[in-house]
Image (cartoon, rainbow, N blue to C red; front, top):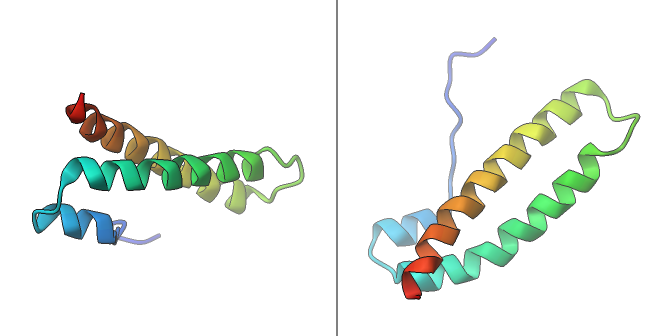
Length: 79
């Protein structure tokens, strides 16, 4: 067991914090997160995947989905 929270580090989040153009950041981030999500969904579908790897991959899938939702909302501001 651990009592430490997940530590997320993102250059895009830092740039957002420091005032970079949010829509431009979103447009750059979305393709990368969508690709990563596809890769993780492929990985988690392997039938013989050990439980620990499957569970941490599912965690990553949920994180990528949340990031895609976030950046999609930001990108929609352009419209």
